[in-house]
Length: 231
Image (cartoon, rainbow, N blue to C red):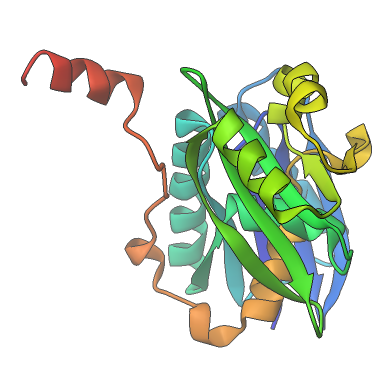
């Protein structure tokens, strides 16, 4: 199964190609340009650089994350999948982030800044056989709620994601167990991790392109404002 993976949930635009269980290429840009400007040209360059063959499946980071970024990624994936007659695998962003530390014995806690005083977070571990196990389901939480849960488990933990950029000092003050904050090269979303998650999920997770819907986990600001006005 040849998998094209798209990651647009965070500040980086990223695309990767996996074939025969191996990553054949990954392009990532963090230039300050919008994903609508970078994601399609980046993906086109990746495919040309890896032989130009069409993928069987497109794996896409499904959320949570930037509302705009997720929508751009979803629109692009649906368009490409329709044109190529390819299926889609929706990959939870937090679980894909956990794949940055595939096979590690420590707890893995991805944290994404959700604003409004919250984080998107979850707690994971790689159980026997290197299968990802969810200990705390990914969701929108108060940061201290996540940290208290980790303290209660009492095991060493690795933090990653852009939430660590904003809340590093809080983590240092509140976490009572041994911990590491991932180095910058392993801290953020990666299309290669999306591809590997999809590869291990297998063909049974493939859905039709038009059935794919991003997982926002919260209402957008515009939706909240309309709800507050009773519209």
